[in-house]
Length: 439
Image 1 (cartoon, rainbow, N blue to C red):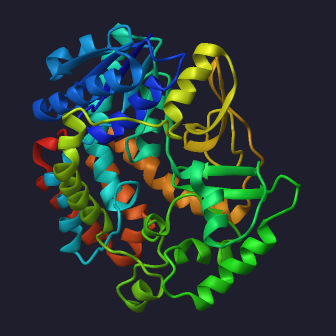
Image 2 (cartoon, one colour):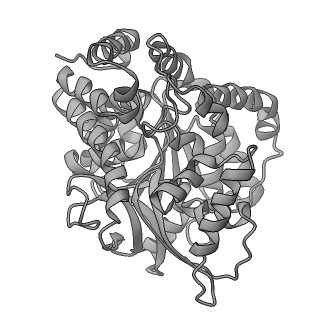
């Protein structure tokens, strides 16, 4: 079996996914192809993966690195699984551009990697690269499964699923930890195994049902305690999602710092007091990037000098591979196309996040009942932006970039149409060659 890791310079994430593979008796004797366009980061990851292979896997895996576009087809050739973890444009310059240009228009963001103006432009510079990956995959590994971890998840996975013919599933951590994290934060006792139902879109999937092992419905207590936190705990980190529970009735999969910018409710120039009231961390993602870079610089020596080990994580990738290889079923929360009306009150061309069965037949999404109307409406505010951004990337028409930004709830609630268009033009200019030419 061959596993190709695109964006292998993401050393810590490569360690988690490939370390998980080496912890699996079914997968550990595989070929691993590491691909990146950054020579230094690729060589560091190659050293780390080889050390990990020696320390925990008795060198059972065969590891090879491939640098640069000219070697990309060879990296992909014959792959069974392709893991994608690229970041086009990196923190510097592109993430900085995503934050600083909108700030000139008074538009403030927290994460800017999923939706909103930052998510739109992250997708626009990433989709052309994924299209190139897909063209190579159709030629040299047409039956491979593409496991996408890169954000903006729904836009990238949705593009791959609609336009490339490459079998693709989008994978995100937010579904896995959602229910138990909520119960821990609200200090609600529960017995395992819990039973949950989650459906929606990436980073705005809805926790629709939650029962403990005894069949007790945990939602009445969740709603009571969430409102209690809203009213009494001003230091709480999750007030945006608790407000969702109060106003919409349900909890959401992704964090409050993410969801603060997904709507027109919380980051408002005319209501600056909301930032403090809901503990909204503006400019959170740039801070994380700076801290991650500093942490990597301080810790990389231990990864590179032989001290690296690994305990299997809960990342989906290795468990998906195991299920396909062994035909032992596994359940994931996957981002897949809504082609057959998996969520009947969302568009068929949308990328939705639902429970999926994985076995030798691949990733098989499970149909869901219609969402409560208010939750479908919230999802649609994001889906509108996602579909128009994909349309812009597919047609290279600038008007669709403008329309995506105009329909984004955060942009449209803060800026005029003229300012939105002007901001998009400034972002296109600032990104330069990181974007294709739009007309």
